[in-house]
Amino acid sequence: MASKIEAYVDTPAFIAFLDRSDSSHLLFRRLFSNPPPLVTSALVIAEGHGWFLRRYDRGRALQFLQFIDELAVVNVESFDSQALAKSSKLARKFGDQSLALAGAHGGVVMAERCTTACWSTDRHLGLTGVRLVISP
Image (cartoon, rainbow, N blue to C red; front, side, top):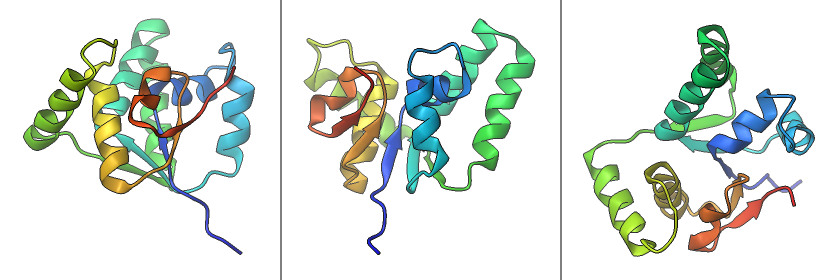
């Protein structure tokens, strides 16, 4: 049996999976039910935590962090000064787009790991040519 291809998980995918009111919840619930190896960014974790904190409360934000801690198939890539330099360069390359720094770091992570699939609802992550798993 062939091994599953690693997928990068962006903030909107985590939010959609954990928030039943999200229009993409069913898609990401299905994907997370039998996930391949996953990779994400420390910036994605920070964005997700902040989103649940602002949208709901501290309890939901902490539940999000607990979910990440317990998600055995995910590798979280750190964000240091080297990652900042590379991500800033990518954000400048696509300066005519609304590519946030977290998204640019995702692009860097996917390029360095040769990740070919991205779980997101943010079309900007497809700028680098990676295949998006996205709801219509």
